[in-house]
Length: 126
Image (tube, rainbow, N blue to C red; front, side, top):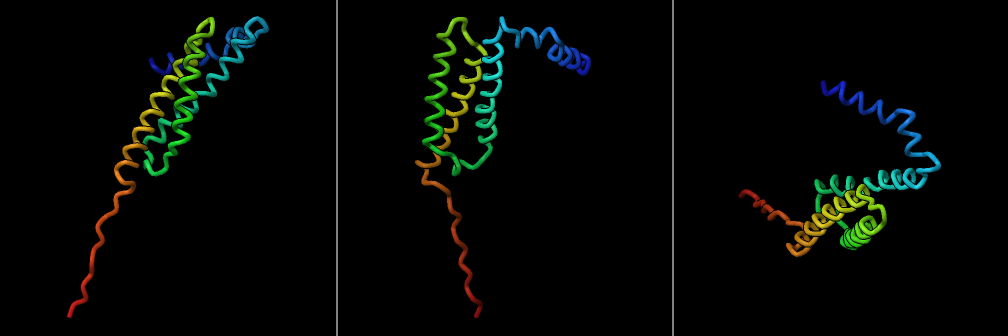
């Protein structure tokens, strides 16, 4: 059942009509903006995968820059006519991920950085 549903969806995406709709001269801007948004989804996907990594590797400057970038493009996606909700969703999810990363970074830095284990002293036997 699910495989048949997935197959029908993929066939629809591969169809000549769908490609013509996306890349026709009448819809040229839609085609360009569609593929830009698809490429933009790499940012939140990378941020989601980085949430599993140690916060030691988070760059505070880059995370802040990506937060500002996503806020600006969320506003752009909302203000442009017609509204580009796919771009808005992409940057909204990136903003949420970057804010989580910024919170992890702040907590890590304010917590004193890496927690070191107490060293074990070995006493020689006499």
